[in-house]
Length: 209
Ligand SMILES: O=C(O)CCC(=O)C(=O)O
Ligand SMILES: [Fe+2]
Image (cartoon, rainbow, N blue to C red; front, side):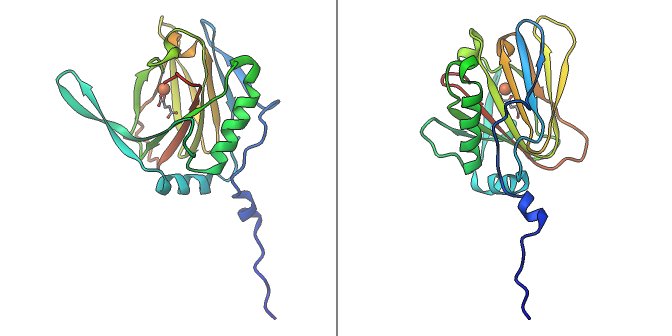
């Protein structure tokens, strides 16, 4: 007798899904009106999402002017504007749930999605704040969903004081809010740990970059 293949518990676990984050997000206040919200494991089915994003996203290398030289930025990038279809439907769900969750506090929706691919431990992003846009002058939020290898988001106050570290694991949500972009800097340092690829998805309101 032929026995039909049954989906295993493992397969069921792999369905990419996000659910309303209320009641599970933890807020960690920083100094100067900055804060970080964390929700480990918000996204389920992250294996499938990572696989899909690695192949479906038109990753481009970024180059940056440094004094008189152009240097390669050690990570790959993709950017989706408000009208662009996101590269996985679960990211549309994530953006919608984040916009709903923070609607009163933020006063506007998350609209853009910046994607970064850190291919291994030698990819990184240097200390910076997202201050190219309105984040330089006004409170705002940047919500980051991570899939793939664990990396650490480092934050340090621009006025000096102790730095903080936030784990960014497979499926984790980390939201930087309040004055975080103008009073604190953040970075993803290189690591000598043998890590595989990590993709981060940063949701931002209009005019924040
Ligand atoms: O990959 C991350 O988690 C942070 C990326 C970041 O800070 C940026 O692209 O502005
Ligand atoms: Fe950033």
